[in-house]
Image (cartoon, rainbow, N blue to C red):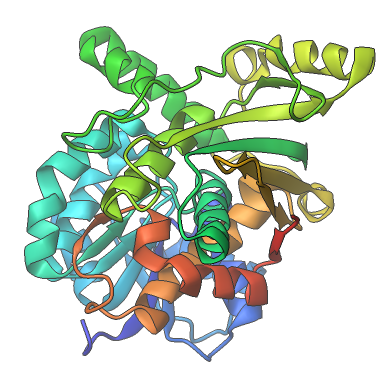
Length: 390
């Protein structure tokens, strides 16, 4: 799409997260990139454009998931599409199809493994043929986790010549809320599972996105545990189900750069002693996502987004006992403030930094698609820090 009108188009720009993405591009890049806002209503697009202070001449595109022709026309005009319109299993496939047919790059916020399983099966070969790079999970699920493992493994291989066979991903601290879209996606997945029981197996299988590869048994991460090596209690982490699948898919797409016996899990680390144990059980027993989930389109205030943060540790030992640790930290709430910046930088990394010789067409996760280029962008623009701690 070298002759496209735009570098990126934000599809869903009038929604809560799409609006934040547009606001970020307007403030961070202004007219340094060619971008447009897209959605179902031109009136709403005009209103959001003016409210966020985007330039008055920011192009607006009317496109609707129920009108495939409008999606294809939109895809033909841009090098990459950012879509925040979920649940993707309801509204996503027509846009993926349009991007694959036109050779347009695509990034989304999907944390829907059953839908992603279908997209991988249906569109991987077609995307290879057209040159489209389709990249799922470009927000809090799963960028910090996928890139955190990649970042640590790159360092360890440089120091020791081989990757870690086992890494623990541990959320050390987090302030913020998960998005209404995440809750809606979970609800739709459960509805589909009731009609299609094999989906439960896909959800349980950490290798269900790896296409014809079954790795070693993985920790289930479903119970509160005390970890002697970390001297801390740990609780189940709600995003682990999707993040671990994406990390294993990254490993597979990179020719098992972490090894075919790689073991990875994620939990929320709550600290030592009685206080740590109580906090871990409180997290494990929290049912707010199921009982009172946020609704799509709802989200935290600007102050809540600005004061949010997260700190994720990745750690493991070599066979001779050397421990290596890295961290990924974000300076905004995970579900909205940081996610909106991450997905924007994912799209820009594809169109500005990563050639099709480096990353040819296909259905990807972030580490094999963009790797070091994305880490650089996120560090320079999006408030993320990647640090080797030991």
